[in-house]
Length: 318
Image (tube, rainbow, N blue to C red; front, side, top):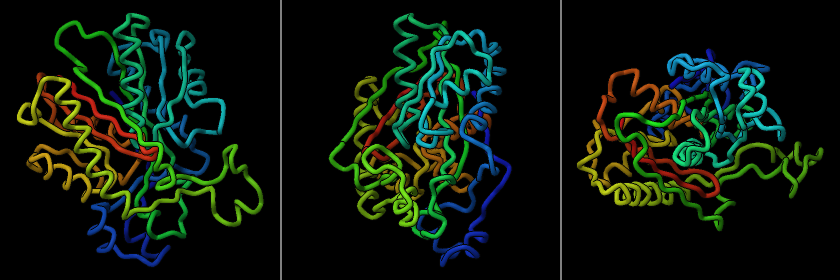
C-alpha cells in the first residue's frame, strides 16, 4: 500500500479569509478542519506516481512486474488519455494494461472490484489499483457550500493472489442513474462543451445539492454494507473496522448508528483530509494500517457512495 498527500494544507481559518464561513460552521456540519491541496502544476498522475512508488516498494515489486494498472479518478490530467496511461509511462511499467474508472467517491471500491476479477481469473498476476483526485482543480472557491469540503490526495494498493488467508471476500457495486443531477460538473463534456459562456457562468466546477444528498448517502451506504456482509456470510459483529468514504463526518456517524456499529470501530481521517473522492477510502485504509488499527486476520469493511449516483462496498480479511 502507499499514499501521498500534497504538502500544502488549507485550514478552516484560511477559508474564513476566502468566503463567508467559520471554523465552527465547517466543523459542526462536516467534521473537517483542514485539507491538502496540490501545488500549481501538480496533476493527478503526479500524486498517483508518488503513492504508486510507495506501494510497489512495500510490495517488493518492480514496475515491470505489473500486469495491470487501474486508476479511479474524476480529475484526470486531461479528458484523455487516461491517468493510468500517463502513470504507466512515468513508472516504466511497460507490460501493464492501463485504464481509468470514473465512479467518483466510490471509485476505489469499483477499481478494486474490477482488478480483483483479473486476479481471480488468473488473467493477470499483479495489479496496481489507485484512487487519486485533484479536486481543488474543479472546486468553486467562491461557493462556501462546496469549497469547504474537498481536498487532494492519492492512495495505491498492489493486488495479487493471496497464498495464505482470504483477502477480498466479497464486493457489491450499485448505481441509480436517475439522480445524476444531484452531484455533477455541468460543463466540459460532449453534452455541454466548454465555451466562454460556460466558463463565465462557473459551470466547470462541482455542483451539489447537499441536503438531498445527505439522506440518500446515509440510506445507500447502510444498505450497501448490509448487502456485502450478507454476501460474505457475515454480520456486523464479525467486522473489526469500517473504513467508509470520507464525505462528511455526520453522514458517516449516521450510517454507523443505523448499523449499530460503535464509533471506535469506524475509521476517520476526514478531519485532516476532507473529502478526496476516489482517494478517500484508500488513503484511510493506508493510514489505518500504518497506525496499527488493522491487524492480520481482521475483517475490514469498505463502504463508499458518490456522484452517479454510485455506491460500492467490500469485505476484506486482512
